[in-house]
Image (cartoon, rainbow over all chains, first blue to last red; front, side, top):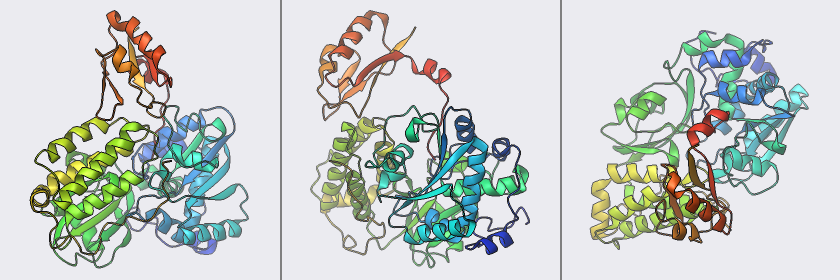
Length: 410
Length: 80
């Protein structure tokens, strides 16, 4: 397989036969952690944390270790993990088993949300084809925070998926208080390819600091919404082209889902999707959810609705998140309805500064980043709503999904 | 050894005793939850800080060696 050819992950391979045809058998890699470090693989669950650091931490721990495949994709605008599991379950399993061998883990748990029935079925079929008994499939609740590592471990222990304070990190103390490697399915699939082809092959695509290919979920006003595998560092114009182009004028683009950031439509085409370029532009990659908001939608109504939903998705544990995010959501809705005074924006700034960094997890931080970028990009629309109330576009069809997830707060 | 205060946000229920006892380093947000000065505890306030820690009804306030020192002694994981 040529190193620069795409797709890498989505080559097909639902059945074991197809998988072995698309990808050579998995060789016994003497030092997968080292290969992974040299490849510069970053976790694809949203944080882009170096995968080798986690592998090393778990390998160096004591006691019975476990590998958890974290497919608890709670981000409503992301579908890449479930699509990867549907289309290449064997590649994810290869990665999980190779990671288990590398860190000395006996058991592998694949955590798949209840709503991802097709992904779970594909994984079950794949396990049956391999007669693989070390991998256990567990269904976890659909909740925005269910994929947060420590929340996921709670769910696997039979409790509601609520984050706990870190450190200790799961790599130090996870399932059954033992070192646990929690990795995103895409990260594991890349690992399976690094084990086959080596770090140089992996680095033939992407950038120096963020190598490889990546899965993105493109939604909103494009002709062919869905999951695409792109080279890391591709510009947004290219991503939009891959999804069939925009169906109408684009007001703004959301990168990184609901803990992500907005970029003005005019700035969009040149934005490059790699960690360094995005950070320099004040944007976020997250788990690769990209949404094109059409000019015909009302950004204020969309943002107010999503932040209201994010407030509902709190785990209900930390005061600043429970009260602060709810207050921010209320204030945004008052702006949307034209019921907010002149101090509304100053109040949002004050509350955002107060809740940032004050939860056990990143829910308040991600939410206020989303809000801050929305207030910047949609400044004119926000002021119009605050003064005159709902616009003609407010009642239009929702672009950003707010599914009926279970609430975690008591 | 430089010490600093931290709040366990899950354990904290916003009694506010800490801000009463140590207003020099702890203020309350708009909902009554403590915001702790992260610059560390000066020696002159150490006794007051210990009193505030002891007074927390939910044991949510902690005094520990500064985070720079803790980072060196702890291996890091992370999410994603």
